[in-house]
Image (cartoon, rainbow, N blue to C red; front, side, top):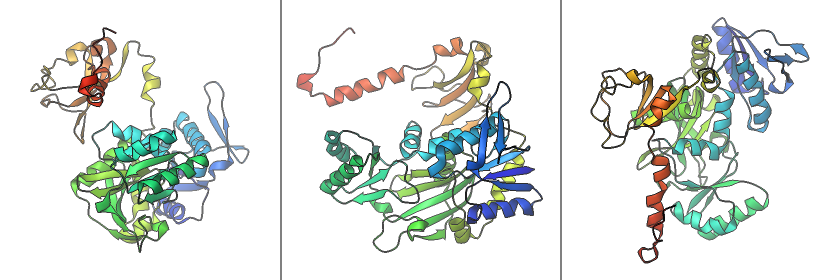
Length: 402
């Protein structure tokens, strides 16, 4: 395998370890500066130049894209994807994870734990937002902060309002997040490679510091994760479109809560804490995947007129509840079930004998017209009960035909 590691820090611990692990396994490996590429576009021939010369052929790319170069870095990764080179993390996945608001928005529609979070712009909305997440103390985060930078704990409502007002005056976008008291000063970092967690550590803050990041002086120790935490970490990475990720979780009373998902996780802290060859696990995974470049399904489906991918939700009382996939006769309607989602579990390519339950979700490919009547009206109906609950009974609006 010929591997390119995209990195602006060739001497960093993570980049050196990944290069050493690849070389030790007999692979050709080069560290390429992400900012030294030129992207060439012409009909049918996407191409890349490196130091003003045409780039040679590579089997795989491992992006290590820093936050400060996200836009250009993801453009380079995207170009490799269009050239059918396997990318350990795609541009889409990196973009999803880099923005804290975006990543939480994506995760929030799934059955996965996240701290109660709100995002506001108007000063008048701040106080109400703080109360919605449970009141002070609250955590205030810059949307694009890294390594604990831009994460503040406000002990009172007044302090929170002052901090938010100051940050907003500096044109900074901030999130207001529920403070999980039982997890103060500690969190879990799970290192996900493909569909498994290859290592995990608990980070514990020192002194009065509430941020547990190793860069902030936190101490790390190896930890064996319960199945719930392992499943949550892998699921979060998959939802955001990442194959290699550092998933940070809080240990709350209700179970794991995703704090952040990092698309370029550092290796030094977790390899030191666990004594495991995590760099080797990353390289082995990439080597096993090089024959499977990413395919943008939406682009490919445009040539299949009338066919597409849709999600079918099975509510309580559905005719599908208690039936096997075969008995639903979806196949007879030209609909294939690709994946079944049941709570936090993901069941790819489910067997026809599997019995369906209430609240299952089916990811299907098939004739869109056949699937149209199966898509529930939940999106349109969901908000109506919420609106009623917010209106006092004495002032409920009259029924309208609109």
